[in-house]
Image: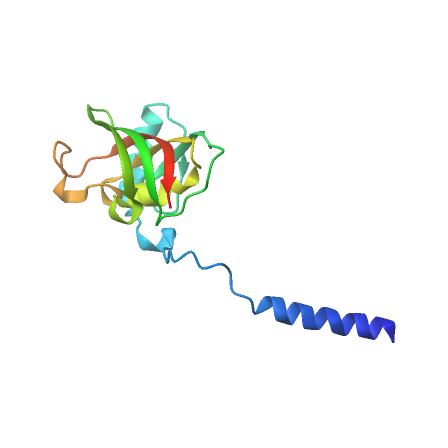
Length: 161
């Protein structure tokens, strides 16, 4: 009788907890389905990185990343507002950006930043390598030529609630 009662309680507990929703952060973003690069861009970027001796992890979106320092502060998600210090280069070319940014909405940045910056916590640093589709694409941006493959070094200095 005790075994039957215990088994029944376990079934009720399991049924009750399986119906609970996970905490809704309000960020409905599936990084692997929201943006991704075509295979031709991935192959070319992989060749660029290999030729420069860079070992980076490929992400499901087509960007590559190296976590320099994972950070120990707060975690972020792809919908966070963050503070960063960033440098950007055209791979194999010149630096086009070196800036400290405050209160950046990750919903408003290039796809590669939105997908890969959450790989670190506040205090962390990451190198990200992006094909054109995950960056500025065929239109380019300011002094970034169209269809550029980019490298960013980003330090995550804060998250704004």
